Image (cartoon, rainbow, N blue to C red; front, side, top):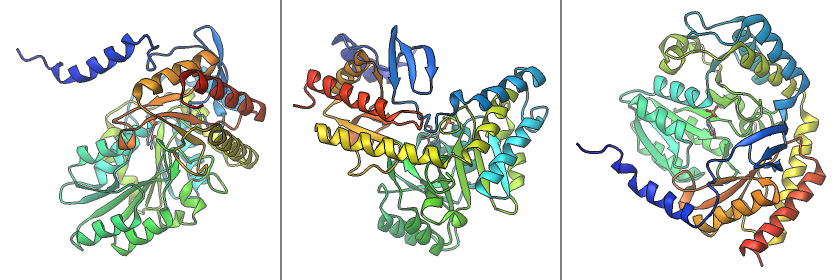
Length: 400
Ligand SMILES: Cc1ncc(COP(=O)(O)O)c(C=O)c1O
């Protein structure tokens, strides 16, 4: 018998070698208690959270929690069904209404996760004979959506408008084309030049999908994302997003003005063949989305936090993923996986949680400590975070 697990041997070996150095497993952390959007108890210690993507800090919002409790009481713990059978409750429709209002778009479709939203929309609209043109650093859910849909995949260099244009020009003029972009790329926290990319896509008669997972709620005047900030939201055919970041719960969605969009509810397999979100979840999502429409003060504070942390880390001598802060993600580049894991652990011992990211999830084989700020981090907490980075960085020898 061929052991089907033998393909994982190199990864098992790499993991064992890392753990043999005595470092704590960075992928096995338990949050023993969560006190607020920015503080939890980990390993018995009060820890500042700087790696949760809880950008707008909605997880402990009083109205959001009240809406979830109320729906739990009134509708029970789960729907036990697909959206197209017994799994569409009033709350799912209210959530879709909130999304339509939030984006000022005609259609909204709620999925059980953002992963499934990408999987479903991309695989359903781009099939055999069509082309998906995507940034090489796209999220796994985008790649998986392409694989499932059977379209021809054409990747272009990260955030490179000329490369996108060249690829588009080589494709048959009358073929179906979907350009897939992200507003913010989550590894380095850099923003896409959507305005130029959408212009060249439209010149090539391609449809455009933008995943605004890391920008919704925060970037743009109304928090609609990078496409709004760059004034091109009207040219985007499909916006994909998630409830697991700024919205502060779980779920995914697609919004669109396409006149035939509603047919997706019958043909999109990751929408049809899975159970819908529990009533309490859609109630928290709808409440949170409506509150995010009026979140401009929080957005301003989050930008401030992002700028202060970026400057502080750079002044301490850390190498960062972007020259300027472009989003609420600040990536600190580590020399290698071993030192990255040591630094991650040293930070945890200081009482600071960040994400350790490594290849293949990261671009160019980098090991990163990804920091994601929250609108609920106080400026004092950001100062504290910088102090903890300085102490840990000196201890591990990342900075002098
Ligand atoms: C760009 C992007 N798209 C989609 C997703 C998937 O979102 P979800 O957590 O809701 O499945 C993520 C999650 O990390 C993401 O970063």
